[in-house]
Image 1: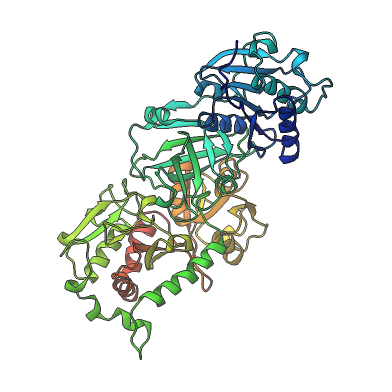
Image 2: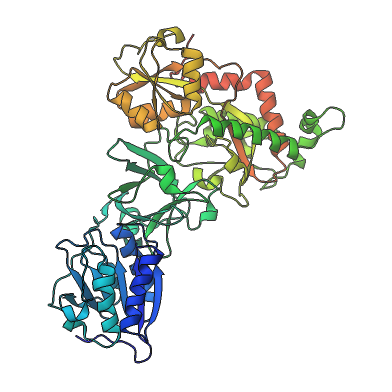
Length: 582
């Protein structure tokens, strides 16, 4: 079957995992046989042995190249019984390479396979064929002869090409399990699902739609992260994750100006991800943080506190004599002077569903739950009645994306981090994250009342977190705590009864008991530690908001009057069954 090669200079492309030198040798072989050929090295940097990555590169690139002969070589089976072959396509191209699935996806987008032929004819090989360099000895000569006018059918017997070994996506209502195809040079994970698969699983997707993503690492326990679907990287803050549809139409998982593969600890080969639409029982809390595990290392917390201090001192107006505290003067925060999104109304945003114990009955407007009560207390300090507060829905992930906001402030368990402060502004903290103790119901420490009792427990904790610092400084256990690289690993240790208790921050403790470990409970929370740096939640505003100083003032008044402590006692200690341990 003769391919439809152009009558002018024939076009030959090369895509390999060889690196520059070996690929140049292949190009030299082509020129030696077909001196008039126009040879393009599409890539010599495919990850060695990664057939999926090579297949996806060819599929993505070849439709944009001229009709010609395209050589693809990612050949872990070189020298074995695997066949070398050429595939003729409906567009008129001929693809040359190993019969390991590498060429088939590209052939499908070039009009389909119209013929496939084993490279058996010795007339179209070099005289000496090595066992380890078929690119030079077999593939490049065959491609050159076809480019020079040989019929693809003369290369050898007709065969049926092997398909690429990629598991198909598994689509269920509200859930999509997909293979990881490859990792691109930016560290983003390209996934084996297309827009039709997304639509079948989730229907129409709006930007900002959150997903719970689950994956496994090297046969270890599963891990989870909350990730939004977005259209662009710029829709999330620097360092934050997103799912998006890439330029080739594949679903992909990336990090804005970061490497998702490194953050996940996930290699492409043999891996898969499961994305679920984030729809939960509204009585259950969601993961408070996103990526790649729920809690951030202490280093990030320290940096976040320093950045917050700089932001407050730089943005708040100051009196020459009394310093930063003058920015909180009542005159500067008169209700009729506040820069509001809607005149006379205070617009507050949060996510939907609104989870307990932060809100009550998925209804922020009832003023119940810790954040619901704090929101109305802040509104009251600014001079607003309950009827003058307007609530709007804003997804967790989209709230801290760069750009203008449609709300005056957002309250949604949003931790202050340096990355987020580059995109949005935060108030002073309205909640300092406490450490919670989780155990299994019926366990030895289920009824512990004091920190001292926990000293005899086998404790699981995540490395590099404020929780680990609290274990060492407050609990001071008799045996060294078992330290895990991720929070989910620590959770699984408790689930599998390898430890007696798990120490995590209190918001995570709520999530663990509600969604991750059946028959678990919160024993209590550690007392507030003295000194050190504590992670905290802040009210979120758009950058440059004129409300920042006034919100700081309101929170300061709630703290000094004891009202904030009473709200916390009501909603995060008493009703949430998380007593402070003695």
